[in-house]
Image 1 (tube, rainbow, N blue to C red):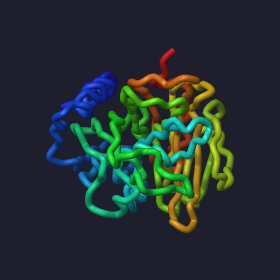
Image 2 (cartoon, one colour):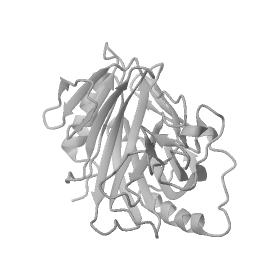
Image 3 (cartoon, rainbow, N blue to C red):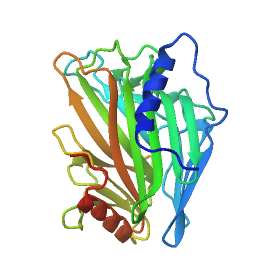
Length: 316
């Protein structure tokens, strides 16, 4: 059985936006545990979600290696968004921060404040919809900045459709996500972390990929963002993960970031989009697409460059 692609992401987000605002709570799936898999070169790519993380991706393995750290409820392959929440120019990324996998207080515990609303997995396809928790409890602060949310559970939703393999690229994971911003909220600025991957510290080498030439150049620790896609790899290049978005570049993105958290012994990459409006950004759906490549450094390089050359998934 194959899941119908594309439109289901937006449709699920709309459906569950209505349910999330209704008096009766939505019917939650019995489990958030699911696995999809597909052959990629000498190994399989295996993607796993868990109930603990409200259906967010807990694990990606290939070639005998785990690519995701997943120590708490923030270190996954997941999506999140942040808003100014009426604070004007004083934007702080975690102050109003709906997060797919759960909240900071969920820690390394067995449950998530986020609510999984829908999950379907078949063969190499995964579809979920989640009502996201705020990263901060209303009484918490992040880097001295108080939370601007007044509840632990937001009315923001994210739906995703994940497919392992794309055309002749078995090492590509096609990842489509739709954020639903609820009506009634007034934000002039929105930051959509369409996708981020928190990875074990052994993925210590940071690389930038020029999609036009398929050339790599080393990156410093930063942290920082750039227009070129980012790849994180082991020192030998035997294992790597990187991302590229086919969405047309605008002033708002995509931008690719890389981060090394030495004390926490974790590294991360992300793909970010931003939008603003002098009055208020519109409520509704914001849809993005990201290709994640998993394999050796050279395989990730050629996969992302090949997809970019073809303009895979790009809308004119």
